[in-house]
Image 1 (cartoon, one colour):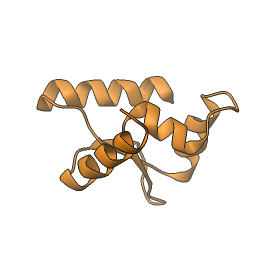
Image 2 (cartoon, rainbow, N blue to C red):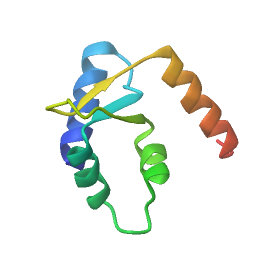
Image 3 (cartoon, one colour):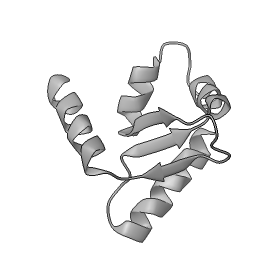
Image 4 (tube, rainbow, N blue to C red):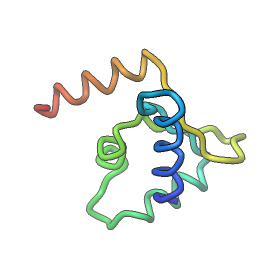
Length: 84
């Protein structure tokens, strides 16, 4: 799952010239993503590592990435709070 998400993000950035800041997953995708990391990684740590806000959409069939200004502001505040 992680490699698929990285590929989605790369393709998005190549197409738009900037990286996505949102990752949309269904519950099963999210569990696969969490299982891609060892147990020391919390969901918050995974979000920070991917540099995308993660949203769960129960009706979503395939993972998607996107960019919104609201998510950009949220990620900027998060990085400021973590000393970046």
